[in-house]
Image 1 (cartoon, helix red, strand yellow):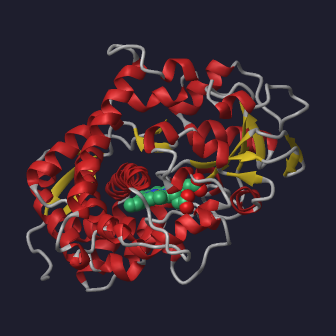
Image 2 (cartoon, rainbow, N blue to C red):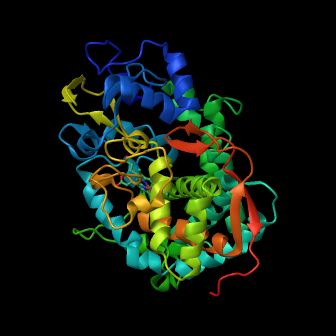
Image 3 (spheres, rainbow, N blue to C red):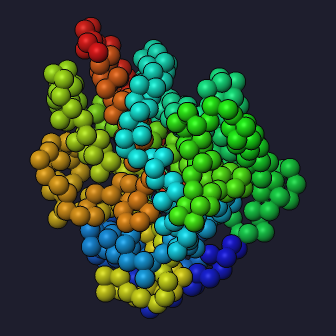
Length: 450
Ligand code: HEM
């Protein structure tokens, strides 16, 4: 097993918050098939802190669902830290990426990256993101009943390859797309949850062998890009993250070497595209199934306002946050919500349940964008991008992409259902629409002027 799992305490009811009696395999399957429904039933039974006995944890995943416990898990660093939990991702993204950097190095590392993702810098990408959305729209509009998520994955990957790596050459974009889709798709990343010996390269047909081969393909391409850019004469005038990071220096004047850059860029690309695509898919799917909210949004956008746009994206992220939970480990034996939590236990801030807490959100299951107008949410009641020092660094980019897609699509077409509202499935830490978020797009006769 990986170090994180080796240190994890085994299951003993007196050590952990309460859990259902159902066997581990049953709990795992129920979480996969209905993450919000099953975890919601445990919350109603046990309160805001409970244990889930699911694979791959040999003890239990301690779950926190509620604003106060969400805040504790995300911000009380003396008790809950990202180290072990983030290390699970290291074989995929690289131990040097921000996502896997433990404290105290994390803060300095984050400072180096923050300027590249600042809102004002990201706004500079607006027109290019719009062009990419425009170019990919025919693929969506021509279908009669289309799954939005695969379409959006292609788009968000194109965006991130340009913003992060500065790729322009269509052949290079295609090579990256192929390598990343093979690496991330087809269940390959499930290897991260296998025992350590099985993660190794045991030959071309072994899961570990395949994982390492596909990972090497992505990293080779990225390495080439770093080399080319280091030598590029126009680097100082470029605005992609790679070019900016090559010249970034910390307060001691130190920059990132090629190995660190490689991990960093891999982490940014992997963290940034599937999450954004899933968010876009849920928003369009939910709009298709809520015609009153959809028509209000279209009318508002047509009138030149964006009053409802952010509210709609917030409401979609409340009901179906792309990232289901953020994970930490307990630094020492502690408590949460009055329950014991043993040292090294995995602890998850379950955003997807906090967002459905009826005390925070009346009629939590209803899709009502207007609930976000003119009010600020209770702190830590709405955290689709996490919170505290590890809050998502790509928020501005993700919002720019999601809002641009909605503006462009709703100017051209009206999303309608192409079947029933899809249930959510848990895939690693994301919740995705079971059939890709299928919708039908009815073309609009008159488009808004630009
Ligand atoms: C709608 C799309 C997105 C969602 C829902 C999302 C969600 C999240 C969440 C919940 C976290 C916190 C994880 C934790 O606390 O353990 C996070 C962290 C992170 N995200 Fe995002 N993300 C999105 C898009 C992006 C994009 C576009 C990028 C980069 C291009 C990105 C890069 C990162 C990085 C590097 C971190 C780690 C930050 C740190 O540890 O300091 N994300 N994201």
